[in-house]
Image 1: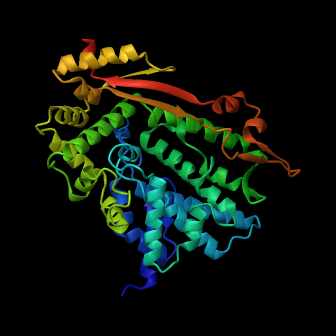
Image 2: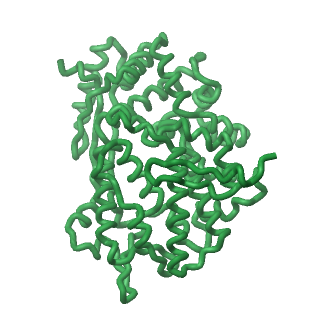
Image 3: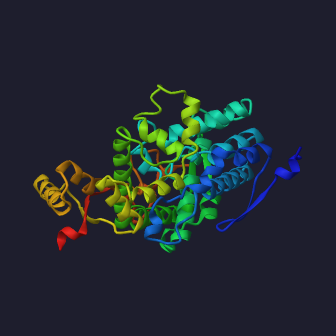
Length: 412
């Protein structure tokens, strides 16, 4: 039997350097197939179609957030805040598993074949499963993840408008995409953290680091996550999966067993199947399942499915139009008719080549729990009030973009 000393491994992370696995429990969870599948799920979905270096995974991100969580707690302890070893372990496990419920291509899958359950709910299911396996040792981690732990600031380190999740993904995603403007000073932000009345706050001298963090988030959102080509690709994949799900109700379609299960079952998590079985099927899904199927479906007899898959694999993406307001319904109808005529499809089939959506973003949301700035006299202000820069009030306003995608050949 392996000794515990063999389980204290070290990862060499390109962002932080050496990241240590702190104990046996963390090691056993990381080694489990449910966690190892995160190696096969890209952190930023189809962004590599625009930024070729963006092939980093949710596995690396999860380890990064664990590292930042432990560093944040070390710094808070150094300032005199009482955080027990049990609470450190629980917070570390909670953030390690915070993304364990993500499926391949993340929100694309949520909106197409795995419906009625969010990735946060799935992450909680995975945590509960690990809690069963390890005899209740994740009870406190689950309390922190769900916001039920009495030390609420530990939950805020996982999920808030300035948490270790956001700090890591901004720093990591900017590194791998090469978008330098999206990078944030992780160490500075953690060094400036305080706890006031069970809430997180940032020392006033760290206000410029917070401003930079919010500006970086806005830049990354529109330049990377919501880049026009990325949107076009992700919405095309969503249509591919919806078409495949529709066809799977009528005939067998090439797919791995796990993907086939979700294609054939309309709402797999609705209680009609054993929950452990469905979770196990879900935790076998990764990017490879989806892209292997997409490659095979290029030659499917269904003309809609094959066309969409060819476009996706060849990066022959749909043209995208973005506007600040809604598109005229007559304009949409006209494009649908043109698509049907161009391909010789029915209007119902043409809908699969006409992608519509709305993207919106608050770099800082004024109606969510605030990022508080702590002054030396003990008073606190919301960052939007404390900042002397106009851009913070601007960043508090939502940016909403309506978009449609369609074959660029229609313009010829």
